[in-house]
Every structure is written in structure tokens, then in C-alpha cells.
Length: 195
Image (cartoon, rainbow, N blue to C red; front, side):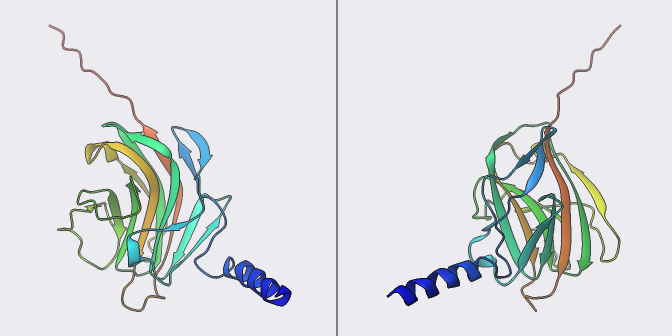
């Protein structure tokens, strides 16, 4: 029985090192303050997350995706208001079908409103109500900075920052980097009319 326990413990330790498993937290800015996710990486979109991997570097500020990877990080609840903005940088190294970043209440994905912001890919998602299309980056186009007025698309409490790198055909292909994520509660403004 002792050798079985030792083997089981060794297998569990080995499994934590397999591709796609990360024992690190995502670092991002929350209203200008550096913070981290409350959990390590989790699957996103039900059975969509297959053989893809996620590697965090630069203190958790840079996420590199390879293959078909649908990943999520739980964050402290964040109230998205009309003036909330999401900023990040993205680079496409190898083509995928969909590249997107999402702010979501849960990990189910299919909310039928734009919670995901697509920044690249070969699949046409223009008519998919889960996505808002950003200006697409191109493979080899370098890092592109994005500022998304998320509060103009939805409001409410979000609990996850999620990522989609969809690659159903040849699930090991596709590579991208997302870094320097920030969620900011912008301030409202008033226009005074004189005269």
C-alpha cells in the first residue's frame, strides 16, 4: 500500500507540470493597482478547452497560448459600469480560428451578449453575439495595444478574466501572447452649456 501511495503522489506532482496546467496567478491592473487573480488557471467554455497550453511569464503579466486553449482566471468581483475600460496588448505569432479576451460572470461562455472581444483569427464571428470584434491584429504584425469601452456593451458583476484561442482543426497549432491587462473604471463627465 505504501508504494501505491508514493506512486499516486508522484503522479499527482507530475500532472501539475503537464502542458496546459499552471500553478501561477494572472497579474493585472485593477483601477491602476497591481493585483492577481484569486485562482490559478481554470478551463473556460465547458468542453471547449482541449489540448492547448498557457504559460505565464513576466510575473504573471504575460500569457502565452499554444494550441486550442480556452482558459479563465477567477478575480475578485468587479462591477462593470458604463465607463469601464479594458486595456491590453496582444500579439499573434501563429494563426488560430479565434483569438479573444473575455470578462465574464462565470466560466460557461455562452451568455449571448458580447463578453468576449476578438482581436484576431480566421473564423468569421461577426454574427456571433458572444463577441465584439476589435480591429484585428495579424500574424507577424507585432504587439498591438487595445482599449475597449466594455461598459458600452454590458454592465454588471464580472468574476473572471478569460481567454480564447480557438483552434478546432489541428488543435496543437496557433500561438498568441496577451499582456499588460488592465480594468479601469473611467469617470463620467458632464457638458456644461453656457449662453
